[in-house]
Length: 534
Image (cartoon, rainbow, N blue to C red; front, side, top):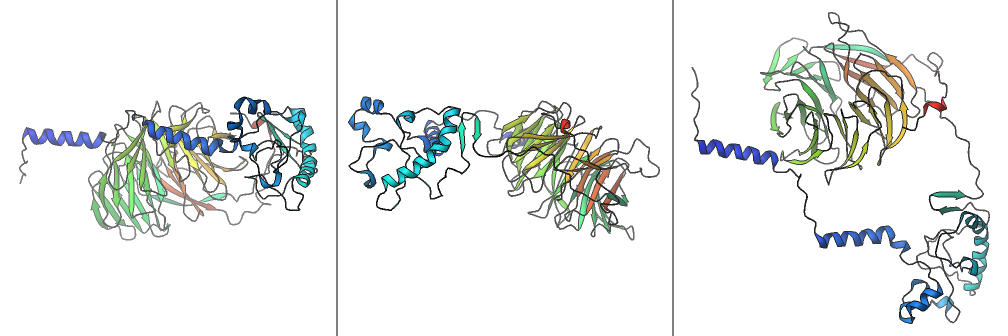
C-alpha cells in the first residue's frame, strides 16, 4: 500500500527553508565585529601594566629632573626618601629588571649614569665589577646590620664575582665565565620491531578511518562501502557493527546472525572518533554529513549541517564539548556538540583541508591542507595564529605528541616536526618517499607513517631515526595496487598498532617480544648535514 504524501502550503515550505538557512548561517562570523573603544582602552591598559610594568619607572638623570621641576621630581620612583638613606644625597638606583644586578640598590658612578643600554665591552667589564661594588654599597647603605632591599627586589641570593652573569644587549646574549658545550647529536633510543599478528576482514570497500574507544574494549572503522564497523571484545572480534547505506548491522562473528539494523551514511565514511566525555560516536563522510551516534541506543541523535562538500576528518576537543571538522570546501568548522550550532567557520586555506587535530593547550586547533600549508588556530577568536608554509606538497596528516609540546606533519616531500606554540621547525624525517596518508605516535616516542603504496615506516621521535620499514602482503584476491594504508592508530595500552588499508582489511601489529638490542641493533650514523633549516 502506497502512503499518501502530506501536502503543505507554499507559506509553510518557504518558512521551513528560511529556518534551515538561518540555522546554517546563524553563527557565521565573517563580518567584522565593531570595535568597542572602552573595552579596547581597558585591554591596552592591562597589557601595558602586565608586559611593561617592571620598566615603567627607570633611572632618570639630574638634567631631566631639573627640567621637570620639583613637583615632578618628588613623584619619581628613584628619588623617594626611605628611612635607610634619609639625610643623604640621593643616588641613582637600578630597578629589578635592569640589566645590572637587581639590588640592594646599586649606585651608578659618573661613567654609568646613562639611560641607554651599555655596549658589549662595557657590559662585560660591568659584569665583573658590579657585584663587588654591590657588596660595598650594601654595607654603606645599611650600617645597622639590617640589609636594605630596594622595593620590588626578590629574596633570592645576590650574584657574586665568581657567578655566571648573563647580560642582554639588544638581541645578543653574552655569557661571562661560562664554558660552552660542543654540539652533539643524540643517539636514538632502541625500540623493538613490530610484527603483524592478526588480519580482520569484513568491509566491502577501502577502510578509510579507524579509532579506538577509551575503555580499550573495541574499535571503530569507517569504509568506502558506506559502513562503520565496531569490533568488540578486547580486539578478539566478537561483534561487528555495520551501518550500511540503508541499514546499520551488528553481527555476531561466532554465529553470523544479524543483531540490529540502523540507518547510516550514504557515501564513503572518512572519519570516526569516540568521545571520552560521553557515550557518543562521531562520524563524517563524503556525503557532507557529520553524525553523532548514541552508543547506548545505537542510533543517530544529532546531525551537524553546514559543510558544502565532502567532510574529510574530525576531532574532539579533550576538555570541552566541541567538535571540529575539516572539509573539501577549504574550511574547518567548530561545532557545539550539544546544541549543533556552528561556533566558528575557520576559513583561510585555499584548498581542501585534509586533517584536523585538537589539544587543550594553545594553539588548540591544528589543520593541514592540500594547499601545502599548516595553520594553527585561536579557538576563541576563530582566527589563524600561525601559518606554516615549509611543505612543498599536500599535507594529509598531522599528529600531536602525547607528552611533548610538539607535533609532526606528513607530506610526500617530508615528514616535519614542529614545536608549539609558534610552530618552530625542529627537524625533517626523510626517507618515506610516498604520499603520507596517516601519522600516529605513542608515549614511547614511536612515530608511525602510513603511505599510499602500502609501506609503513616506524621512526624514533626524538632523533628521526627510521628503525623499521614494513610492507605487508595484500589480502588474497586483492590487486597488488590495493595495498595503501589510509589510517593507523595505537590502542589505549599502546601495545597494539591497527592499520586501515585499501585491501579492505584491518591489520593488527604488536611488538616482537623475542627481539633484543643484540638481535636488532641500532644501525645509526649521525649526519649533521641532514638537519636542514626548513
